Amino acid sequence: MTLTAPEIEKVQTYLQQLFWNPEISVRPGEGHDAPAEVYIGKEFVGVIYKNNDDGEISYDWNMSILEEDLIKF
Image (cartoon, rainbow, N blue to C red):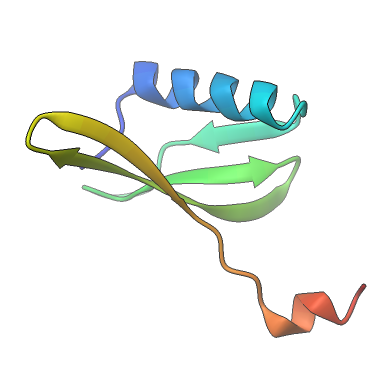
């Protein structure tokens, strides 16, 4: 399911407050039924999927960490 503009705004505000980081942005995904995309500044960090399980809505954040990115630390 695609997130609507109001849902994207609510999820973005939630993440910004949860992590105390106004640099977090949630953007619509490209294409039909594409997940929303999460960025911190210019860095892409993951996707958010909308789920509807028997009328109960949830949002799942999927963040992949590449092994090559861990070398930096």
